[in-house]
Image (cartoon, rainbow, N blue to C red; front, side):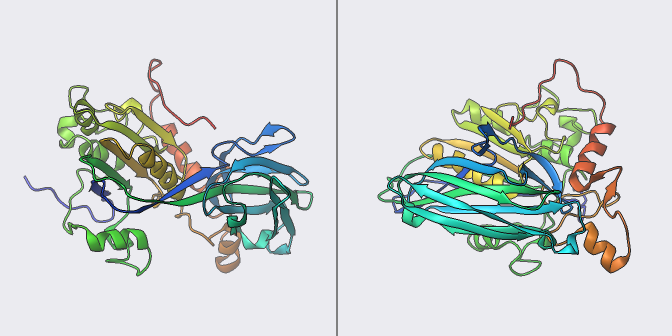
Length: 386
């Protein structure tokens, strides 16, 4: 029986099979100082949390006025420091409240790079890259102070060091390496090939060299049954993960179980959207099944690190991101530059996107968790502990 296409509610999934080649390659690695809890203030490590700021939800750390943030990092080749954050104040966003984020990155022997970033609450999220090539292959101390007004906090969502090096003479191998990427609710016209030019440049480059299918069908209209079909190969009436409180039939084998039985390393990194929780059976067959609140960029860096660590093995890795998703019947999509302040100024709509103090994705998560029956006492949820 042919399945009906469901426009706008489909699941976009990409499967890649790769073999190691005998050529020179570039290895890129990331050290995430925020997620890795490598930033400290007064001897205490900063714990990241899901924070709503400027109407967007990010896993961030909160820095108070006058705090000095410290970290030690081993730099490798061609290092680059990426910082992103926003200044959140009790005053109106258009009031011109500003501050600085300043300090240094210093290596042994006194070599250092001075860091000074001017931040303004009216700008929303800011992003900077600092070239650390002059300090390559050294251990450095990062010391940065938040010089911001009272009544404000600095939400630091990213402090990441990128390393890059060339790996010569990779030997050709016989390894089979499978990477399955799911971009939940990404429509086909959301990418550059069939939608806005340049919206998804990395996917567009891949698609020009890959085999593409332009006619696809979702197994169901929502995340849990669609992914259960994706990871088992069965229709929803067979795997039975159909209703809010139903998981996959334990007798139905998963793709990860089949790979594992064939001797593959198996791992998954999925967004904490409730529906892909291990309690529904999605963790079956995975050596590691991580549920995180990371956004797509941080997830991609984590996945890339895992792939590099297992590049000499047969593996199957499943990456799921929820970035395009929102609940259109309750809240607007999160988007850079969209805030309650801009909506109020342009359309005279107050409190847009929030109810009872919860905004955007945090509200959606609370709403969905409220609808789900309480999980069995013996169920175990695997989550990243920050």
